[in-house]
Length: 358
Image (tube, rainbow, N blue to C red; front, side, top):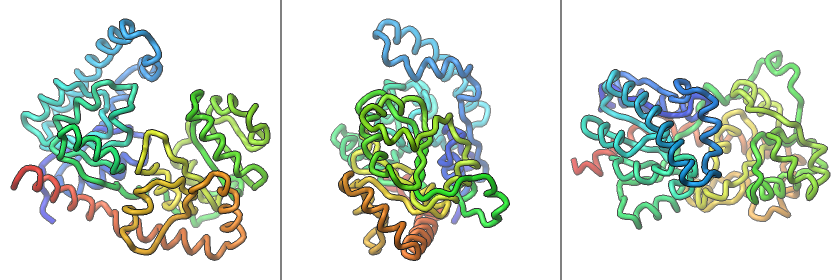
C-alpha cells in the first residue's frame, strides 16, 4: 500500500500500550512518524492539580486552566511547527485548544481517536469543540458516534486499534516469570470515591473466595465496609509498568474487564491486553462487543450480563481449562489478524478519502 503522508505526529499518553498500537498504524501510512506525550514537557505537579481542578469553583478553575492550557498548547505548537507533519493524530484531546486545532488544520489533516466520552470528560472542557475541527473521528463506541452525528459531526467511524504485541504477549521463558504469583483471577485498576467505585467493587466482590488478587489505588478502601471480604484480596498499588503487568497477566487465567459507565456501547481496551498476554477476559456486557467486535464470526468473549452470575462464569472456565485456553488462543488470533496495523491503516485511508470527497 502506498504511503499517503510524508510525516505524521501522534499526540498520546506514552505509557499506554495504545501509544504503540497507534504509532504502528501511522507507520503504515507515513514515511516518517513521531510520537509526543506532552506530559513529559510539563511539571508533573501541574498535571496532578489539573486532574482535580474540576472540583473547584468555575472562577478559580478558569484562571488555572487558562494558564496551564496556554503553556501546554505553546509546547504542542512548537513541536508541530518544528516537525511540520502532514497528519496529526490525537488520542482524546491531549489538552488541545480549539485555536490550536485551527492552526493545525491550515496545513495538516487532523484525526482524533476517542478513548473517553467527549460528553463526559472533566479534564478538558474543549474536547468536544476540538472534535469539530477533525477531518476524521475514530470511536470504539457506536453510541458516541450517534451522539456526534446528532450534533451534525458526521466524519466519524467505529474503529478498534488492535493489540500492541510488543507490550502484551505470551512469555514463554519461565525464568522471566519467576517471582510472579500464579493466580486464577487478576484485576489491576483504579477505583473511585463516587458511585463508579461502588460499581467496580460490586463486580470484583463476585470473585471473593477464588484464587484472586485485586491491585489498585487507595480509593478501593472506601468500599470495603460494604464488601469486607474483598479487602482480603486487595493490594494497594501505584501504576504498574506495562512490562510488569504483562508478566502478571501471563500468570493468570482470567481477567475481568469492567465497563466504564461513560462507555455505553463500547468496551475497555484491557480486553485486548488480556488476550495479547494469553489470558481469557471476562467482559462486562456491551453492545459493541456482541455485535461489532467479531463481525458475525461466531466467536465471542465470555460476557458478564449479570454481576450475580460473574462468579459462576469464572468457575466454569476455571473448571474447563482446555476450553479456556483454546478460546483465549482463538480469540487472540482473530484480533491480531482482523485488527492489524496494516488493515487499520487501510481503513483510515479509505475513511479520509470518503470524507474528503476524493
